[in-house]
Amino acid sequence: MTDDRRDILSIADEYVLGLLEAADAAEIEVAMERDADLRAAIAASRERFLPLDTGVSPAAATEELWQRIEAALPAQDRSSSASGIANANDNRKNGWRLAAISAIAATLVLAIGLAYSVTRTVEPLVVAVLINEAGEVQAVVEDFGNEQATIRLLADFTVPRDKTIQVWTLPSREMGPISLGLIDGVRSARLDGPALPTPRNDQLYEITLEQAGGSPTGRPTGPILAKGLAKLPR
Amino acid sequence: MLMGSGPDDLDTALAACANGDRNALRVVFDREAGRLIAVAERIVRRRELAEEVVQDAFIRIWTHAHQYNADRGSARGWIYAIVRNRALNLLRDGNREFTVEEVETIRESEQADEVMAAWQRLDRNSRLYDCLGALDETKRRGILMAYVGGYSHGEIAARLRIPLGTTKSWIRRGLSALRECMA
Image 1 (cartoon, each protein chain N blue to C red):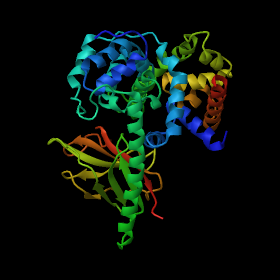
Image 2 (tube, one colour):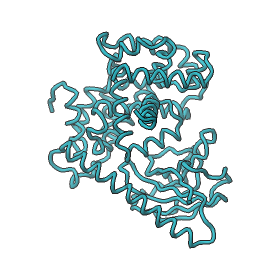
Image 3 (cartoon, each protein chain N blue to C red):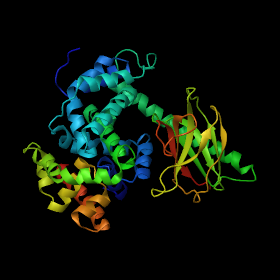
Image 4 (tube, each protein chain N blue to C red):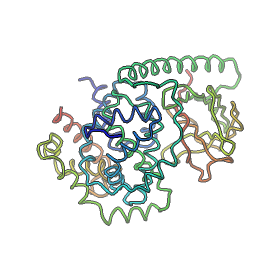
């Protein structure tokens, strides 16, 4: 067994036990969409520990709880793509294809971003490609490290009238997530964020859907639309 | 909708959820919600918070059912992982109705026995029961505190009165031994 392999198994266990720092756990969640070995290691780890959960004495699940859940269910918008009988093999094939395509797309976007950046006088310190849970590229953040960053949206987002997209970064576990700003409307934007430590390699960036005017708590509260880790242009 | 009792049916239910069948989500609820609430409660320590976790988790199960496939492990493991992650996030954010100190007090007052009980309750013939039993007491306790009670490295170190670095390496070695034992 190679060291890499052992590391993957060890990290998968720590992720499943909930022992990773928030930023590391977020990194694992991004990586597992593209890394079949990591995904398999996490699946195996979950199965190992699952009996500790399934052996618990059940609590009473009330009808009222179900009603709250049912009242909050959004409509499934997948009738065209997932119609008929779902077949595990087909699903898996699509998953692979999606992962492969998105990995290639991320590389291309990064290359385009870098080609663009070398033609400008001011270069970003880091570039983060943000992907959604399906592994699709959604946006690119360039952080210039001088309280300025830009975000390019590369997918269509549906933002209700009373909501807004907010951009976040996690400079360190101690600082927690910091808002870089709101996106006015659904378009690429320049962000004037607060003074922060110099952005580093693998720093987490993400966009969430928040109420108009931004998160009331100063921390992300809404669903994560996309996230990704920063890379240093080389 | 009537389904058998095998966990494999959860696969079928998730596929039906992805196609918009609310009855299929109800099947998952009827089969697993009671245990999921109990699992969440071991981590967040309060029934009403545990129900909130499970409520959020079921909405996520519904909206993400199309992403489930066999290379993510069993359907049951996938469902429990969603609940566990929600519970851990709620605990670590610590920003809802309770201050960190309040949550700490709640956790302290009840905890320890329940963590070890999860191990004692395992099937005595299972590999997991045997392999956890083969670990040193401290490693076993650390792993169970993390998985069952949602404790962080720092919390485990404080409660077992071991330096943080030692705690991390002991748990890592314990996990490695567990993998080998169960392989």
